[in-house]
Amino acid sequence: MLDHIITLLMLVMLQAVLGFDNLLYISLESKKAPKDQQSFVRKMGIGLAIIFRIVLLFVLVKLIGYFQDPVLHIPFTDIIEGHFNIHSIIVLIGGVFIVFTAMKEIWHMVSFKNFSVSTSESKGSVSNIITMIVVMNVVFSFDSILSAMALTNVLWIMTTAIVIGGLLMIWLSEKVTTFLTKNRMYEVLGLFILFIVGIMLLTEGGHLAHLKLFGEEIVPMSKTTFYFVIVILVLIDIVQGRYQKKIIKAQELDRDEF
Image (cartoon, rainbow, N blue to C red):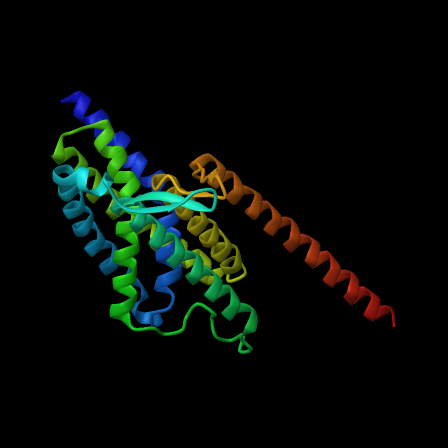
């Protein structure tokens, strides 16, 4: 029994570590909903995603071979070649969608004119936003579920870890969204981190498909590299913010002298 408890704690920690990128996506996506419904969107989206994650867990346990067997082959040697399975296709589609979403929001952010309205709050359909949160949550869940299956074959432990991880995500999503709302300057940072998340999914999907471009095999971005890039982006944002304040202060002093 003690072994089961230790395994459960490890899986919950794994869910938390692997769920950071998903959490950021949920927080940014939910801001597209009307303000009074954003909390509902996050809770409903993650709640439904928990159910779908459990369903996916049982499907993977029973049909893991079908997800790993190649279903598509690209044979153009020395240009592009790969053996795609269902798992790699899903991850690649998720990566493309997240990169597109991040770039679209960044473009909207630099091109809009009304600064009294948040760039992320385009007041989209609540049902569509919930659907996207659920879909992307399932895409992000592949790694955590496969990692859980590598640690244990006890279904109730994996199911419990998914539920606890989902509840933690609901709580943390409220905190992250509140922080981004009070500190809108970090929305740009969040979108670029989301862009890196998309790149990470693309490299992971390419690796799963044994994809080669011009003879070079795609290497997946590790979580260590991902977190290192995040730390660098945060440090750049902090330094740039302080430097910009000094420039503004110096310009104000120059104007006062005249």
